[in-house]
Image 1 (cartoon, rainbow, N blue to C red):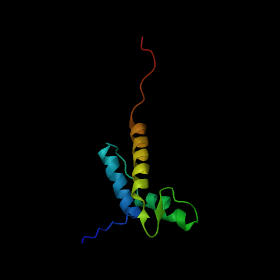
Image 2: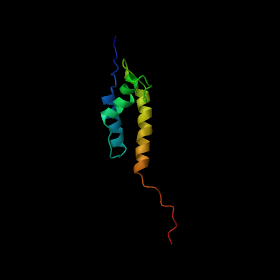
Image 3: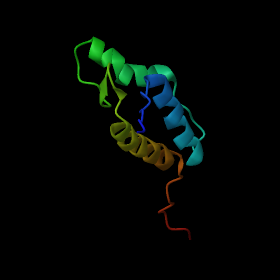
Image 4: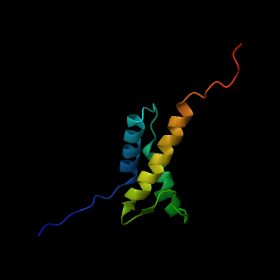
Amino acid sequence: MTTTTTAIVTPFAAAKLVNAALKEAGVDATIPPQMMYNYTTARLNADKKPLIAYTREAGVDPEALATWTAAYVAKKVAAQTPAADTTDAK
């Protein structure tokens, strides 16, 4: 019989995962672990809903983190991509 264990994703680990995704996408930016803490644990401590699904028992929900990361990286990629020049050159 084998048992599987699922590692709890802490806000610190979540920041590392997001930073790896940013680097992979070619974005020259990182997020501090404090940002993930504020989006998860700090909001729970203030009796608010976390911005990324999180419980003290299970940590950051991996699926919610993946969804949030994809949207965040896409936003950062779009922000660093120069807008197309729509002026007429004469």
